[in-house]
Image 1 (cartoon, rainbow, N blue to C red):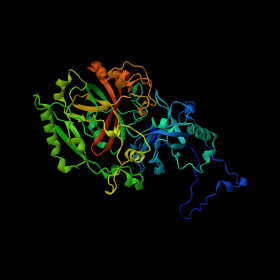
Image 2 (cartoon, one colour):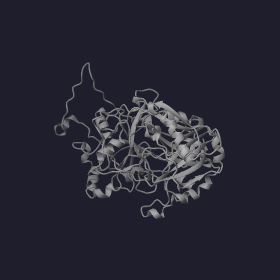
Image 3 (cartoon, one colour):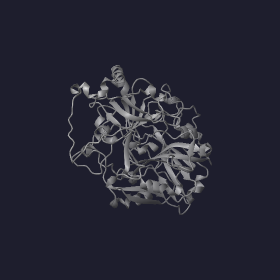
Image 4 (spheres, rainbow, N blue to C red):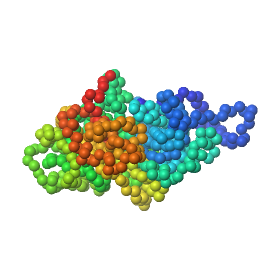
Length: 528
């Protein structure tokens, strides 16, 4: 992730005086340019998706494609020591050009073109110039913005010099052969998307760990959560053991955490969410159309030390936890529904638990419950009728908005369920719940660039590789392994020490998304 420094290309920069004296700029049409002026032609280097493998790392290229996926807007901390920008705002995009079965994987940053950045959506013709090629370990190469990148989408192409480029003309001819209903079947918007995926071998450099996924001690994990700002994405790794796996079937996805713990005391920590956590670079004119996210307190539910080994019925668990939360209702907004309603475990839900988990629970001082799959974590199918609502949902949201404006309803999400993974830290004093959603269909955005290797569909292999096997369009739903079948193999996790790579993202309010990216055996960890 070293590209977040946004390294500039070596080039000549011509600056114009803003004052003393003020520069006079006269715009001349191309037809008025005289040959004797000797002006150079505007040069482009358009590259097709089939030609990316021929480029070397950090090569600059221009691309044009039809957008099929647009991820939600996220932020990442700038690595620059000095400068006004503490965060870079970015999003992931997939675009096809008909020359390859694989799309362009594009990471674009919001710089001086917020009006274009916020309106990129599927079925749009996208042009990005001066993109930089990055190599992914074991995956497809991807493109990221440079300081010289310019973006254009449908409605901004008229009069641009690149319209006469042969590869642009070839792309336009290809799009005339497409049918909208075929492309729309693959078009998606929003949701969690993280690329490149964690490498096959987890490597930590002893001398320089800045370019690696940081291995965080369990004792410092809570600080990582508390330091997260709105829509900030962070990837980290923890070492420990997987103590329990629960498959939550047909979730309601109503932004309410699932609580299925045995008797325990809850400690509710609160942290003020500053108004400045919203991206300062977002175009202020968009506020009226965005969804309300009021200032509220961020809440974390931590599991306290059990005072007695006696068992309590699920009804008592719900009553106790609800009471703890209701005591803080007067200090929080009414929108903090994620903590108010606690759901008990549904009967018959597939699950596995380590034989030592029951005896180790009393020694756990803190249990961070973030194993929830939120609606914001799942990509939605794109349609033209719901375009505005999907754009609002996937962009940044203001902390305040005029009450006379209301948001359009969002289309429903389709998700068969997800796994909640309970990880016990190596210090055995802190436990963490994280959600895991394996890729189940090749049309999912997460399947693009995935290193597809045949595996035995065990719980460990799915956690390690991130997908269900076989990952093929010809595979019917009945042929894919069922959760009960995966959990029958979870016994191989018993006593196994692992390194778990997690993707964290603050979704606003009290919602913190924690998703398992990859699980390593300790034998797959290398120190250099």
